[in-house]
Image (cartoon, rainbow, N blue to C red; front, side, top):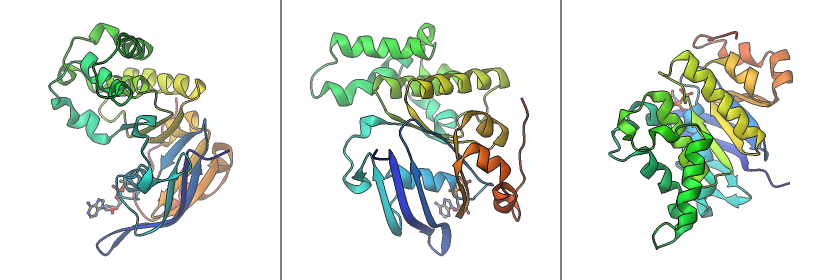
Length: 246
Ligand code: ADP
């Protein structure tokens, strides 16, 4: 089976600063990959390289079997950036409009069809924000806004959801509900890559873990990660471990 993401020997530098050093990993269809590492360990950089938002200095990246430089099926990827919770709220559109944007790639040049609208409404319902459809994105709470962006990805029929610390600033209850939603989407076959600083959340939810600190310390299933020394090795010299039990 072709991996959803295939990263081989990727090195990325900001000027002199090496952010990623010879990182190789794959994300298989249906995976829920938790991407963890201390602050400044290269998680966001890796996600950006993975999605083709930044080109690596060395190494190769393939998405759905296509070199990322040539990848032209952007609608297959839903990306919720860190800014989506913090700054993205200034978008002067309603939730429904935002979610309908997920259909633009499918609608071609013309207007959205009745079916496109229906798919957008279904997506709103699936993440349980139909009642917020007429509100502006910037009036929503962080957790509600995340749901709106997920709904947009669902409307575009994304196969891969990439999320960068999606619950920063979201209250605990909404956070649990949000992770419940991610589980459901993963059960429905959507591949998930999640950056999350709370290691407890990641080991509870993800079936695979990539633990990085410039280099890759672990890439494999969650059980073998929990039993390994990767966590203390990767976190050993920098940062603090945030551990959280449910
Ligand atoms: P994480 O997401 O794990 O916190 P990042 O990928 O954001 O880590 O950053 C990895 C390293 O690269 C950090 O040391 C950070 O300071 C550095 N870095 C990130 N973005 C830039 C940038 N635009 N210019 C220079 N250095 C950067």
